[in-house]
Image (cartoon, rainbow, N blue to C red; front, top):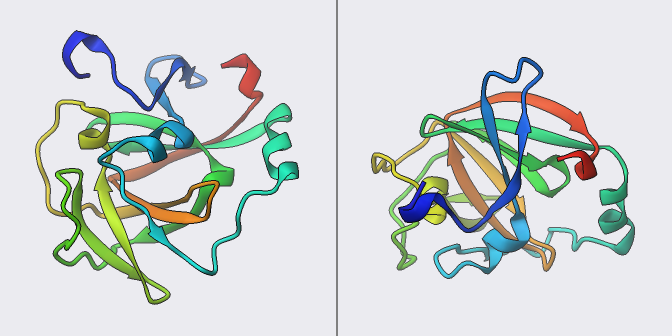
Amino acid sequence: MGPGGTSVGLLPALLLSADESRIIYKLDLGVLSSLPGVLFAADPSAQILKEEALAAKNRLLHYLVFECDGRNFCIDASVVTELVDGPEITASDFASDCCFGVTSVRGTKVPALSLSEVLGLDHQRQTSKPQLLLLTAPDGRVCGFGYDRMVAIQRQDPDSL
């Protein structure tokens, strides 16, 4: 965590695994997409979220649980566009400490971001990650967060978090 033990972009609720032996931080795409260091690329083929997709928050949701820099995080699977295994990361032309490179997805340059850097968490700087989690913001912009491995898919009522 950053100074004071807090970080923007993390929801105050934590998702506990079935054995309750590890903490999983829940991410909020709306907050992440509004942070100054988070960059998105316009993807003309991305679907803008409809009202019915937003209303799905009242039902059971699937959360992807993944590991990044020794921490477990989860995110609503409906905002995940794609999981990229072994992405080809090239040098970034985006001016941001959070962006460690770019990758091309169907001809669109997508920024590859360090989740720990965006959240202000202590971590070892890296220039690559073995996996990339592509997220589509409600307005259709796309970004990628590097992560180390997928841990689980968990179905849960968001109100119970």
